[in-house]
Length: 228
Image (tube, rainbow, N blue to C red; front, side, top):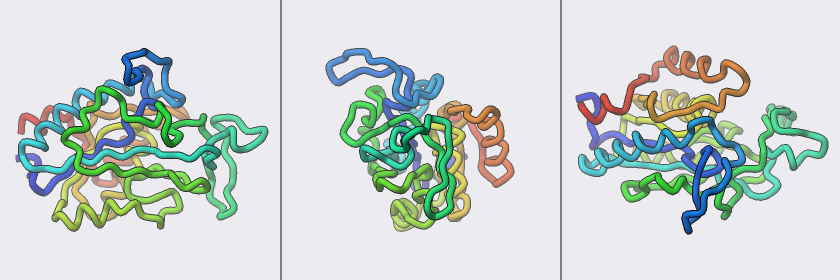
């Protein structure tokens, strides 16, 4: 068996409207692409839904993460006069901050989970990036690398040792979440058919996948887990 479901968790990373190229309102109205839409981002949903069903049947845990930014968040280019998405700034602590379009603002349609993502198997939702002056890529830590989301303690308290990651985006929140999982001692699988990349800067997707391989992550298709 590739995965002991009772000691494993599926982490569905940031499958939110603002990261998807197409989505609808609760009334079924089609809306333009999300503010930070990932090319083919909504394609991660079917494999995640299929695997979540297996976790629900076999006693595993399913966790969803979500960006939950306040208005005026430090990562928004609009929060810094004269700056544009794609620029970087230096924060007071010396860290470099990439600037993005306004996205996943608390309480907006863009911050909601994609309407086709099945939340019924989800046991826990982790909201991150809700501090105005602190961004967050990882499911485990904010970008200061010390402020925890509480996910590590939650998982270890349940005796979970294996994590499977899918969602958005490969070269940011998937990458940092999986690297932290490895550093924290989890067996880490990245679902290659259930991730999509921003692709910025050029080559970031390939570099991220290579870094994950070199660090010890297992890159695998979700169908192999379902079949196993």
